[in-house]
Length: 390
Image (cartoon, rainbow, N blue to C red; front, side, top):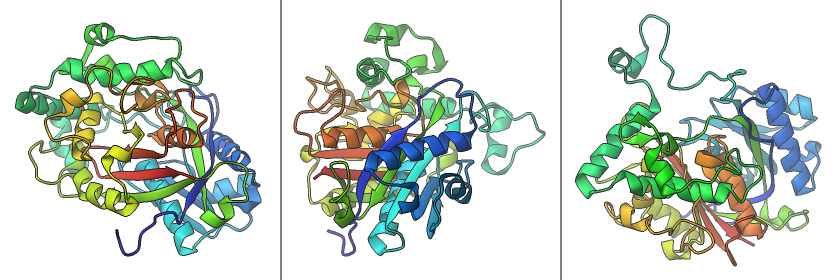
């Protein structure tokens, strides 16, 4: 166990989100305030109780503007984290936990709000630039037409297929599991739209070998969680969900192109996985429900391998035969639908669903769930947490 562990020093006590849509019709500030207000209300707190805000640095909202809009008069901590779905919103949960654990703040909200689908404030990532030239690493990529995340991930997916015999249908198992769960979730964008493996295999090609249903949604919406001390959580409205371990991982690979060295000894996930489980004092077999950042299905399969749930190259067998599907699968994945079928709020909605599972109130409720593993990103600097039921 790490000498200065976060284990049980911070607790999630509130969760909230807006509807997930293709066009919110509202500003990103309004979406953020709605999601945060819902999370505060869920915790049984008032906005004036919040003294810290953490965010993903690409979020367009300013914490001070949020504090002013909601009436948080004593904001004494604010911070942000980089790297999209990697460090991103889940990393903001880690920052909030660190603030609480070190006494920098007592009650912190971590949030993500965006109008990614409608473009009301957030440009779509991966669109070709209309300006002359390109900055930084993109100057080596854009002239050759490599600008979309799907194109970048496709290269890693094809390499994994070449090395280990992984097939498109194995990626499809992940997409089908997420859609299956979304069809139990009226809040999901893909609710009422069932999908089987044949539907996945017949969907149009986006960037070979990635098909349409291998790619996450683009969504408008907001999501937030409230974190406080274990002691204060005892007196609040909801069943506490404790942060048993958390970490950020990075390395020397090129995160900008989302292309991993499939054969590298260490990746962003392996950097933190061994410390994460040791810190929490549990093993992989103790995880009851799994939340992997599902921006593209191949990277979910690779994350399962890199975080140590199976050996490298064995992901295709690990995800097969409905293993990831509730209620009969051994390790249900993204039980509200995930980025692929619920909505894409940079994975913050996966954290919310993990909390529901450990409270025992999820729609696809895993029996007697005690531990949830939540990760963000793969092939980019990543973050992950292990959550524990009270």
